Length: 137
Length: 105
Image 1: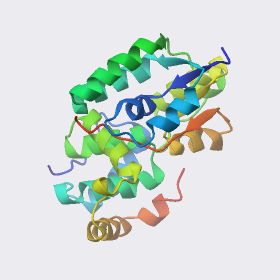
Image 2 (image 1 turned 180 degrees about the vertical axis):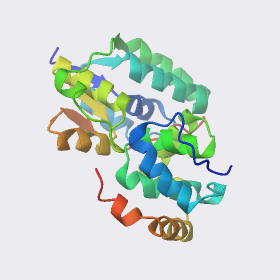
Image 3 (image 1 turned 180 degrees about the horizontal axis):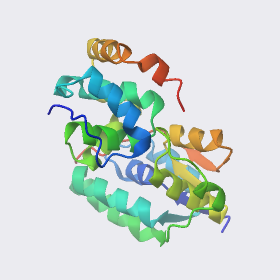
Image 4 (image 1 turned 120 degrees about the vertical axis):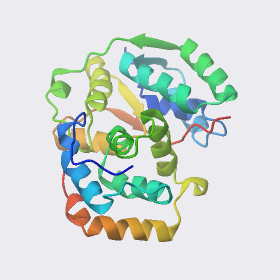
């Protein structure tokens, strides 16, 4: 389990975006690790693809999804105790909290959500990366 | 799209931010101010909360807004709003408590 990382939807977007400036970094971060993604993050990723991805990005997403293991949402008790704020949404809590329950890092670009969880004393393990949008290509 | 006084369907934790945005843009957020508003509100919002709020305020698709949030936050020049738009939106938000809002958790 310690050899797994939990991909947030934004990380999956950064992986598949055309001309991604952070794909190389993400590959190095997850090298040798198994990738998991919560059902909530999967739903967001698929919604993002439907709304904004082009054919190349869709094809890259299919290859990424074939490498992922989809896991049920299951946030840790300390994550479930977090209070939603401007900086922390219910789905942030589910995704970060599921990684926390599994004792694995979540790969995300959402620094605000991570800081908000930490300010509520939930020091959740994360691997932060720069944001990258889909280009529609 | 003018902004309603109602917050039906919006999470409770976003109500005060919505009130600030509505006060600053009672007739709705003009397209030319959209990216500047994303940039400034991202100073104190998670990516998803910002996308939820702006989808609610503009009637745009949540996932498209989420992608726009990622674009603005990428720092890539192609997605950055012009400085004059940022200044205009900042001024309007500051008239309705933006500086205090930035200090809220």
